[in-house]
Length: 498
Image (cartoon, rainbow, N blue to C red; front, side, top):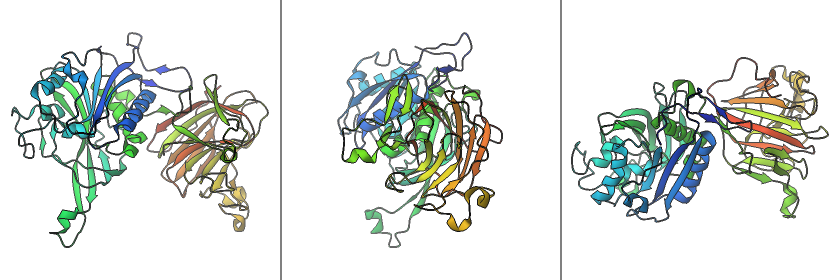
């Protein structure tokens, strides 16, 4: 299957939105993810990749996983000459450094020379190597085939530590992506960059000397290392599009929204389905599927002693519902930073209290119930208030909106509430409200049905989990759409919820 037309789906709780002309294909991309081998938690990472890609774009990811932990790991699918038939793109996530059988490797490469695009992740760069692979391999050499497909030859990596990723903004894949710093990762070296390769991001890492290096370096000082960590290549007579990133050793990186955004863009780009106008939006992702609560966990204190207690959060008719009782929180598994969160909600019965918590971290930090966070209030007729929960934030007119300064605080009994700018922005009961929350650096900005209702700065947290409250009232959510952003919006928010 070869999609010739641009296709982008932003998954939300509303009907699927396609940016497509009338003659564009509406079939989802068929993605083959092949993973397994040495040194990585591929069982977890295949799940993270499949869920992350399918949430972001219109794609059906088929996983071929070999649980072997050996560098000799092989995949039965590659034994067939037509192994890639029916797929639009292949994600290589194998770690098979000791597999050197030429007919086997040639079958893999034949599909890509024939036009099947590839997205290569992390240890794929250290697979299928033989001969003097520690030295730069010349094009056309007997052991050059895999490197020529990748576009870069790498031989090793340094000790694990965070990598600062800096994107080139001139390419469609990376335009608009914000530079970021990973958790502990492996920085792969580049000993040869082949003709046709375009570097899209470079990584910088401060590396501590290894034990054997400290024997000859008495100072033991860290050193600065730099290498290409994201690139594209054109391979073979058909100039097949190839994308590669050496990032992705640890689960925390693979599950990071910024990593999944990058890989999802890559899938669209190599298949010819990422257009310039689409690039800024492809990072948008629904925080729930409308089918289950995958990607979230529940923290309800009453359940500690009563595991059979009735659920507080459920899926009903494709909507996420906070039943209000027993009280607690529904919390994302992942942390988020620099984003816009579009929320559509309504009170299902009697109005009452609820809220969205941003930059959440330590659970039960306040009153043995509330996670450390900043709450954006949804309490009926007070939507948009800030509540400081062991975190703090500043707004203009603080005394007027928070009360006497001597009462301010972020813990029990203190003045934690910061009033919004207007209490008249909610729609009549039974109608859907739209709340937009933007978090960038240390600022938080909130709109309710298009009205700016709060804007704070100097927040003591800049990233964290997102949580939905259960605080007595039943509330339905039909949209929780998160979009990475680099700066706060200047104008009014959307008024299209109803």
